[in-house]
Image (tube, rainbow, N blue to C red):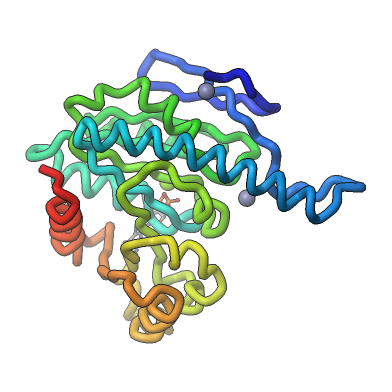
Length: 257
Ligand SMILES: Nc1nc2c(ncn2[C@@H]2O[C@H](COP(=O)(O)OP(=O)(O)O)[C@@H](O)[C@H]2O)c(=O)[nH]1
Ligand SMILES: [Mg+2]
Ligand SMILES: [Zn+2]
Ligand SMILES: [Zn+2]
């Protein structure tokens, strides 16, 4: 499977198990000296089309095993891990949940997730700025997908690059916290365009900020008229029930359990 390994090695660890994920990583940002624009575009297309093939494989496994997969994308610090740990603690009694954690370094987030008692695999991307479908495919080797109903993927904190990489998920969920400013959907349109749901997090802080919720939603819908929005606070728990209803509704709509 890994005959085309590139320059980077990624590690995935589940408890004591360790797996080295070799991953083609022609840096899609590099503008190497002497490389023409056409060549760069070609390299990007090759990377994305390879990624799409891996994503289709992942999607096929998810559908076959009836796993609902959600890819959580946001800037660093928007509250992805906090939101996930709360979600898991609230839902773990009724659903079998697993998590793939993406970060450049450390397994701190996977450790936070494991404290809830569910399985988490940490993928470290090193210099990589997003998870790709190949890495996720290897992480899946460490889970018992047969018993997993809900799989959350916490992407690398980055509002830009993860937008282009399909991991095989049922839906992308973009998290924006109210401390980041309501203009972000206009500044980083790709991820808002690619996402099915916008979770507007940290609404407990609204009284202290000058953040216009209606304007933010309007900007998001300018980029993606179909995007759904749920306002939450992962700290206070406000709005979380609506997020859980969204998850259930999405699974049912997609013919999941
Ligand atoms: N006030 C407030 N703080 C939050 C909320 N959600 C997360 N945080 C805080 O935001 C910081 C970053 O959270 P984290 O979950 O690590 O974000 P991540 O980098 O997106 O995974 C932490 O200090 C959290 O306690 C929230 O809803 N309200
Ligand atoms: Mg995190
Ligand atoms: Zn491989
Ligand atoms: Zn990038």
